[in-house]
Length: 305
Ligand code: NAP
Image (cartoon, rainbow, N blue to C red):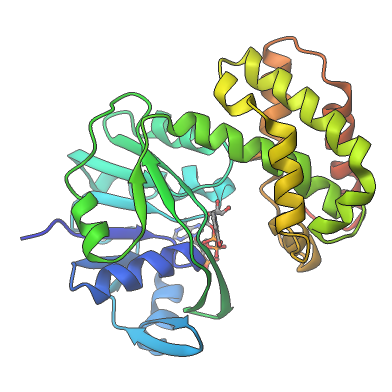
């Protein structure tokens, strides 16, 4: 009998994973915030995934954090700023051999979760898949991609990667997951905040070449200093390549701000600035970017943490 996948957070990525696992007949249970959300979920009759315009609903059983069943495998699919609290809410249910898969973007939340549940194995993920919610309990699969998984402290891959294979979730076990997470964070810091401040699509940053280049050089210095030289390698050309390849897109931070949603700034630019400070590294442009972004969010009445 396969181990049940408990999915914490029924948002975009949580739904994308839960529905594909359920479709492969693997046991999945969805943990929603509270009894009120559970009633709403049950009324909807399941999770709906929209792929290439076709909607399919999967009747994944739902539960609240205080259900009884022990949790052996937990997919944490909340935003970075919610992950630690959400995991704390189910910590009492974790089995001694529990494994957590952390889907959060950026860095900082993974460490906070691991400290909260030191007995559990925490596996970090970095994903290029894209999904968004177009209704309650309904998610559109917007961009095919890949998910890299890894455990910085323990290089042996878990046997349940077979489940991902069966569920057609493209993935790869990564021995250098921290490097991947840092590289993605650096790309994000060089692009996303500027798209918000200049109110433009990614391609609009082609008009701000010097500003981008200065940020890349400070970010590369930071990556070198914190023992991630591979993540610093050729950062600027890659940032330019991404800006060009995604010229027509709005960055995720731009979309969060445009939709008046909280951003994950503290786990992206905020984390970079915090680590720079810890290393007593003076990165004036990065620091100024953070201050400008915080002031901008505050002017819009959005949380700046
Ligand atoms: P999302 O759509 O906002 O979903 C987050 C879900 O977590 C929401 O359903 C929320 O519940 C739930 N949640 C929060 N606190 C909870 C708690 N205490 N108990 C139970 N559920 C709780 O977020 P997302 O877009 O899937 O993003 C998740 C992470 O993946 C982020 O770090 C994001 O940067 C990263 N990521 C996302 C994508 C993407 O395409 N979406 C791609 C790559 C990486 P409510 O519904 O009740 O608010």
